[in-house]
Image (cartoon, rainbow, N blue to C red):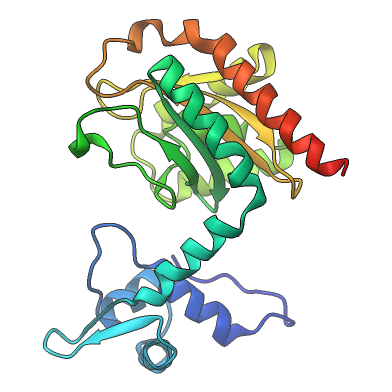
Length: 258
């Protein structure tokens, strides 16, 4: 993704360095300078200088044999620091886990980051370890998931129109169908307070929105374990979703008033 022009007050080198780190996603263990340049739209000479800086700073490791880079453990420590220091997650995680065990469903909490949703917490109700693939920090498509569509529904009309245009221009496959599904989800959120989506085979999810302590909006969902037969009746769990939402927001409100 090519960098957009930013306000003069921003540090361009720092911003570009962060864009390089964003290039590394699950399944992308090693990236060379040319691949990073293609993903960021930055000149190869700039990429070479910044990757060297990131190596020296401890955020990237250089594989000399393959002339490529991978993320360094320092990056993992940042995620751990966030999760362990978050008062919100310390309050929300036990409520999510209790709901997951009671309902025998997956429970997720995610926030928006550009055109994707990032899990803040994910409780996977399944005995099959191989299916526990969704974890905190993982990204999922905004346009295809109930988490993303619930968040899109919270935007004002101008922001939503801009975002949908960005999704379309990003080359989203089957955009016409996806766009119709997004608008159906928006209608559902406005009229019922939740939306439904089936992103992966045999997995359905229902989502609603909640307010975090920082004032930002997150999406909360219940989804069916892949090996279950609950997809067809998932909407019967809507009251449970709203109950969990109310419990979370009640606990967060206690913090706001202390």
